Amino acid sequence: MFRPLRVCADVPSLRALLPLSLIARIPLSALPVALSFLVADRTASGRPAAATTGGVAPAQPLSGWRVSAADAGAQG
Image (cartoon, rainbow, N blue to C red; front, side, top):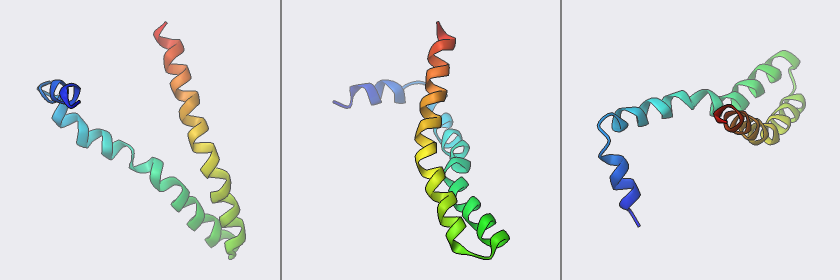
């Protein structure tokens, strides 16, 4: 069961890649929080901030699907 993980762990530079990939994903998880604070500050209300976060939540998986589809098309 864990054989593929052990094979990946044997790659010399892969262990250094994991922390870098996690750091690169921080803006993706911080985007809804930052948008809600910016909208709430600008409008002085929580309702538009909630609507903004509600709109971003379903859009994030769709954007990931679009990027993976573009990657698949680029590979041939």
